[in-house]
Amino acid sequence: MFGSIQEVKDKLTAQNYLINDNSATAVYLAVRLQKPLLIEGPAGVGKTELAKAAARALDTELIRLQCYEGLDESKALFEWNYQKQLLRIQANHLTDRTWEETKANIFSAEFYLARPLLKALQAEKPVVLLVDEIDKSDEEFESFLLEALSDYQISIPELGTVKATSIPVVILTSNNFRDFSDALKRRCIHLYIDYPSFARELAIVRLKVPGVNKVLAEKLVAFVQSLRKMVLKKSPSISETLDWARTLVLLGVETLDEEIVMNTVNILLKYQQDINKVADRIGGLLPE
Ligand SMILES: Nc1ncnc2c1ncn2[C@@H]1O[C@H](COP(=O)(O)OP(=O)(O)OP(=O)(O)O)[C@@H](O)[C@H]1O
Ligand SMILES: [Mg+2]
Image 1: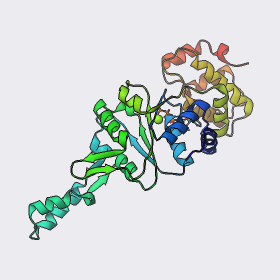
Image 2: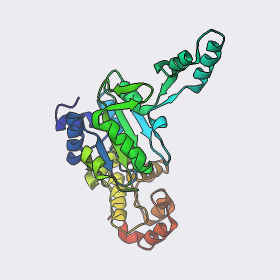
Image 3: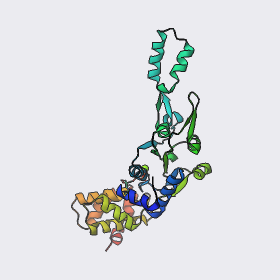
Image 4: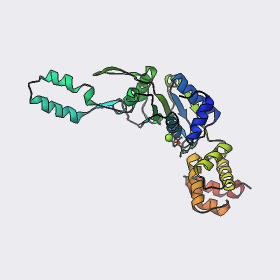
């Protein structure tokens, strides 16, 4: 449990996740108010990593539900273990059990496989449930999830109502592929994570790529930050900054010049049209 906003910051920092005040406040409130945290923001700004780091910081298990188009309740909640059911049917066939008895038998707790959502609700101690990329799931799934999260219980026809043994810390992430219903937004604490400030990005680079010297780290972060001010098809995110820093260290680069940037800019930019745009003004973008 987090006792204060400062504790959120300290414990996440201890897990190598550097968080700003705004995000730390949202995490604190979500955990204390037992509300799901809905994180939106561009790719690679640390949405998923926040959930992972929070689980480590809270010293608990992370249960991940990766969303995709067509994800349905059974994949999220539970599935009958058909193989085991079939074996039991075969075995019962050899006895004088009636079909009614067998049916009652094979649709019981012994015969299902708990999927992430049910696992999270049935865990002995509160876990972190990461519902990753919820915008990729369908709206029907969103409403189902909403219902499950609104009172932390689920009704399953064959099993009745399953109430949470412990209330999980729920973190939902989205890349803004689609808008969410007002109901979902109302239910959650909303957090938008943007690209980091220069200071925070520099700290992340120095933490995660210890081989990079201070001056080079400052220059490469300043360069990435200036790219983000341009209109690009895809701005570089923290993951690209880290990849670039590792690349430069691997190549033994001590300082940035036009040639080295041109030869490695494909690590930062993933579209040729962006690379062309930047190539024209690389000199001007490089920090002094
Ligand atoms: N605040 C941070 N402190 C430390 N590392 C960070 C931070 N934010 C991001 N990172 C690093 O950046 C990388 C990308 O983070 P992550 O995968 O969580 O992004 P994401 O927002 O989930 O992206 P996507 O939308 O593509 O799933 C990871 O390697 C992560 O460790
Ligand atoms: Mg992610």
